[in-house]
Length: 214
Image (cartoon, rainbow, N blue to C red; front, side):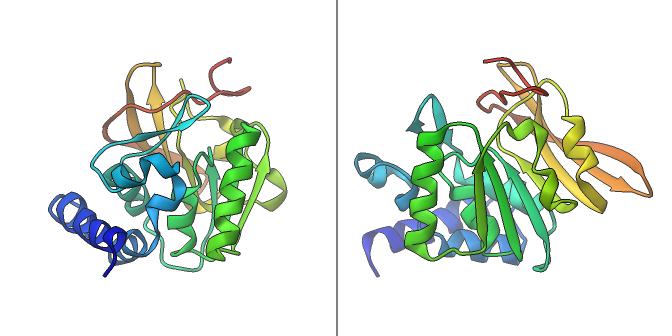
């Protein structure tokens, strides 16, 4: 077993299984996806640590536990179509792609999107489609989505994302100010929206028409 495989196994045991990550599909995906390929070469030795890392352009790759927490909260079974807002490094989309049928991901920073696409291709994760756009507007042409995940913190839940959420769907998003947010789970049933708060988190800003201004 190589250095990174050993580090990944330790990450799953110590940071996920020893906390409250119990979903088998989430654990399997986090065990499979090579997180070190989603950061700069100089950062690879720290890729499996219990912390976020910078990825350039003022953005970060989230702490592994947070990625697992958000993934688990979506309660994916394997045949869903999932929308991600904020591609970033591409790691969260990669994890989702190992569980669901199709991932659509939107990023507003071209340099990050280009790198993420190269990583997806390198790993042959062909069930991910990515585009450059304002993520707060969603990706209407491919909706509705069984699940939506937003990997940046906004002042409110963007209405276009609620509109693009399928009946019975789940949306997870950090909502709050630009210092700290609450991780909110939004569920749509019979046209009604229910919001549950999961934990306090801190994410980079969700920038766009239905988020923060640049």
